[in-house]
Length: 86
Image (tube, rainbow, N blue to C red):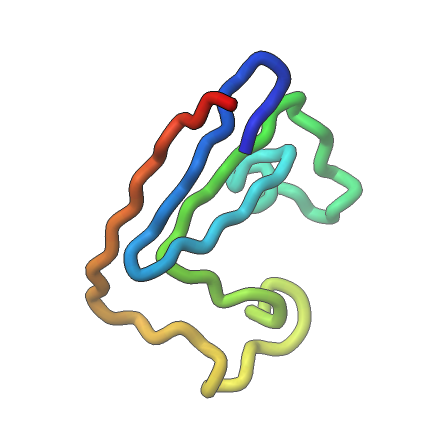
């Protein structure tokens, strides 16, 4: 990720890393009754995760079929954030 006057941010995960980048916070998303309630915060909020369950997670609509659900279990992973100047 990068922006005007900012270095690029490189994210490496071991074994991998998933992410969400959006213009509102997770708190704002949880508090919103409808997507039209969300407004651009003027920032990009980056969430770095070991994994994501994805669309169909019962947030709206039916739950994901069991074979696609992330299992709750201990996990070990690491990530490295590196600013990269062009």
